[in-house]
Image (spheres, rainbow, N blue to C red):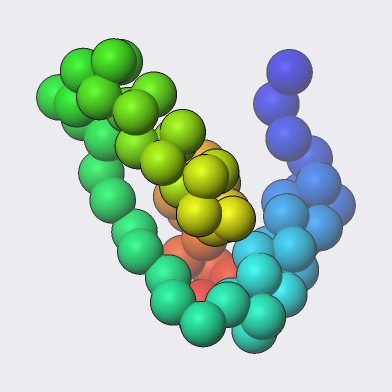
Amino acid sequence: MALTKQDKIKLASQYQSHFDEAKNIVIIRQIGVPVNEMNYIRKDLIDKNATYKVVKKRVLIKSLQ
């Protein structure tokens, strides 16, 4: 199901609030990363009380502007 414009606006505001609250932000490109390695990274982040979020790229770019 495609996101409506209102849904995308809500996502952008959520992303912006995450940026405002965050001390550090790391953006990675997951292409070519094996599933087992990505699961290890997620588990490691959870153990360190970090947040791991997969976001829509275009909405992310709009929220940063």
